[in-house]
Image (cartoon, rainbow, N blue to C red):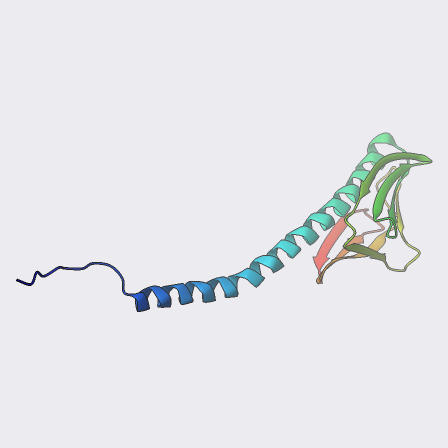
Length: 146
């Protein structure tokens, strides 16, 4: 006597096709995740620079003393100075490059009444580039992605 068995499950071909579709999906999504991570890192470093610029301006206004943000691209360092006193220092990762335009303009000075000498910086982390501009008249900081 032959018994009938209702076998339930997947065939080998169905499993192979499903795994192939999953492998293709992972291959397509992985580069996108890598680019997103680079973008997030670059935005975080730009946010750090703009926060320090805004902080220097606020300190100049509240303490009624000139404050300056000094960018040292070789040492990957940002420093806020009040006169000769260093009030804050931040180190940037080695893969972040900051350029000033014109090149000697690596110091942004904020006066007690809010104005500054202005600044124009390019911040690059990998392929991602941002432009950070400090308005000379108002001392406000503006960020644009390039």
